[in-house]
Image (cartoon, rainbow, N blue to C red; front, side):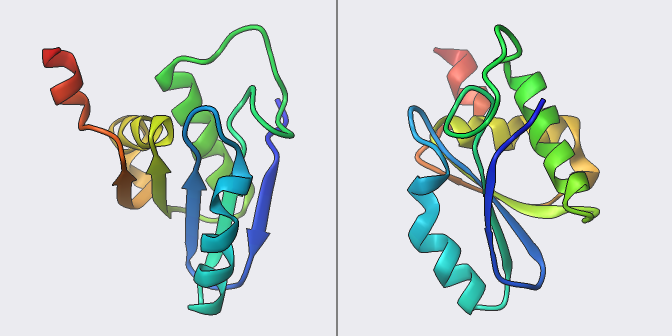
Amino acid sequence: MRLHAAEAGEGPLVLLVHGYPQFWWAWRHQLVALAEAGYRAVAVDLRGYGGSDKPPRGYDLPTLSADVAAVVRALGEPDAVVVGHDWGGLVGWTMAALHPRTVRGLVVVSSAHPASCARG
């Protein structure tokens, strides 16, 4: 499984996860701003989007969160601040629950907490 990512800067890792139906390009301005602020900013294309592979399955939150946790490790980092927008926010919440050692911090934009989604 190959995941595409755009990267800028050096310093602590900030991993940006797009929403539906976007891809890394949604974070282009934040990549520059975070790099200028002293961070290593990486915007990943989730499976099925942008330049990432598009397998027939694996679009559930546990699998997507495992993908993103693997990106952190592939970048040679123990953890990252994860910033998720929309669907990427749910991926971030799931990643924090299932891969807590990989998430140093979590910022969720335009996405409800999973508990509120479960209530309907």
